[in-house]
Image 1 (cartoon, rainbow, N blue to C red):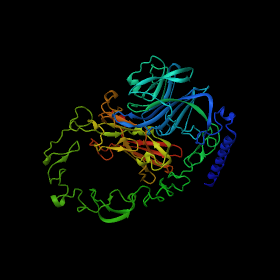
Image 2 (tube, rainbow, N blue to C red):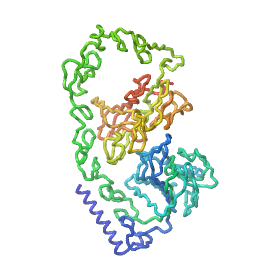
Image 3 (cartoon, rainbow, N blue to C red):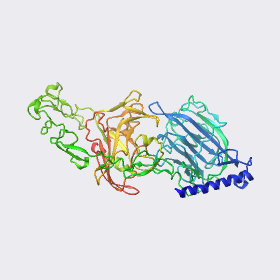
Image 4 (cartoon, rainbow, N blue to C red):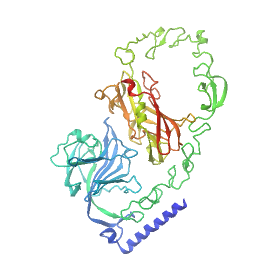
Length: 631
């Protein structure tokens, strides 16, 4: 801690020395090219006077708190993003407020040159306060950097002074004249077209279809209508009726000193007040402990949980004596007849130290009769599935209790349509594809702020740098009836509204569990999955052309179709921060609480076994349903 503060002290002295020089002697023309004022004109500590590189202008297109409309017709939240074009050919994407959105496209394409690229975040899709910069380069068309790296550009949101509002409607576009000739590869443009949906394009006499304008396309888009296009946040925006919702303005580029005194450098004052990044040699925010406290004393315990300092937690409190995230030792009783009820002499132990036949209650009045009907019927097992003594009702081929005194007909077992399900049994049947899980899993790291939504949602168990295992979750309906969830509304108990992310969560979609195979213990509390849209995304048994019934507006999965949450989506991971190298098993279970009726609940889990190495995972095998079983 003393060394860091000493470095901070030196940097502070350097910055004060530079500012004093400017105040006493004016702006150094070698540093700033020219200036209109002898001293700082703004009290930011970084912008020195009105020092500007001559002839360098920027044109800024801003979306200010504009909603994105989801497939359900509901707003996904208000977003603030911007595109900055400079007269020297530099392109920048500014994302001030994007709610970790995962449905946008970002990129650039010039069809005549056969050039395109698509930019993707390396960790969480859509990060707030992010600056992505594309600088023209002789060797390659552009060099890319971003504020997400230690030596990247500092994020700054431009002030909207003297901005001109664009009256854009939904699915609209308008021509805008540029204040300078903008060089894009080997062509310059004096105007462009602004779409209401987060991109601009160049060329004349354009006819853009609603479909191309509205929906984000993969790159290359193969859209012949434009000479070139730049997508800085391509999504279904709706700026109608929002004053100053979409604006344009022109500014000069200022000459700036970073906090280390480097002209146009990338050092910045981090959250702990330390000048870091750029040429300082210091990592930004490295003085935060796991509780997000600067120079704090909180640390990770053996369970990978943050304790001490201002965390409000004690060391290893997730281990109550039986291992991390396990219940404390308690009294167990043997369940002799496997009816879920215990009896006899109890034993005080941890769950993993007693046989699976032991339970925590001692309520069995008939410990040798699993049906507990000897007192009522005179014979063990005399009570049928309907509760009648010698009633004759039985569990049928569909899993229902029929016959006997129930008055319900026993379904016949014919399978006339060849789907391996008796015709009389009609229900969805959800599975997790084990091969998709195994082929997609990989180790990654993400940065989590102390107030991040992912902590509240249970996607991670702390802030700071988190080690995670990302993976796809492909859920298919292999039953003979649709899984019909329906339309989101505030009165539907199937959904819970997330105030943090501004959208609804479906709470019964999937559950993740991690097991240490060396001890057999569960490492619970390290990941969860809630669905925000369950839909027909692809075929599984049926061809894809027959899988378009359910959308985010009316959710569900058609029989024979599938939904996919790919590994890059938010919360599509298991947090393994603090988990030591070793051999583990990851289980992914759909419909974990049996909330929906299914033909079979036994096939709802897929598993992978893997070795956790220092920098990667090695998949050893998988278990569970795969597509080949149903073809």
